[in-house]
Length: 161
Picture 1 (tube, rainbow, N blue to C red):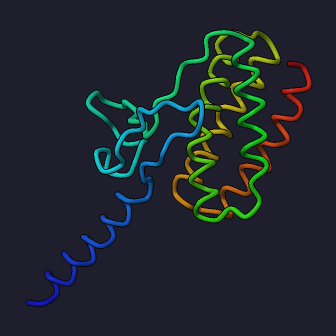
Picture 2: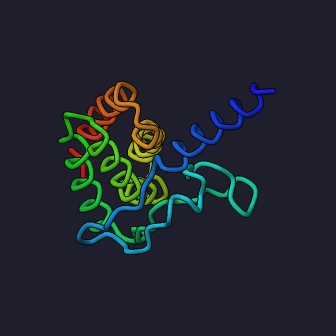
């Protein structure tokens, strides 16, 4: 029977591509050197880890603990992400890594702001996750759409920072 061998080969090739979708990169200045080897997480940081529903990260970044750091990270990473135009494989990878940092700033705002600003931060968090997923999956059209939405939200949000 040749069908099972072909299926096994196709599965191996597809699985191999999936596990290599988030290769370990050298950390940029200011990034943690604790990037996690992509092979150890099956190429998916949204899969369940050791605990049910636990998110496995490809990059460990420091937690944002004050408003000044949140503002700095938010503005820098927003500029980095919105400045990408080619959305080729390299840029999508860079966006994916930048979202880890951006998520920490947005999480700080969502936890520490009140009223409309808190709601805005929570909405931004959802869109940043969509940017993260589309860039991680190397889906340029989806990433472009989510980055455009993020840009509008971020411009309005950052005006009050």
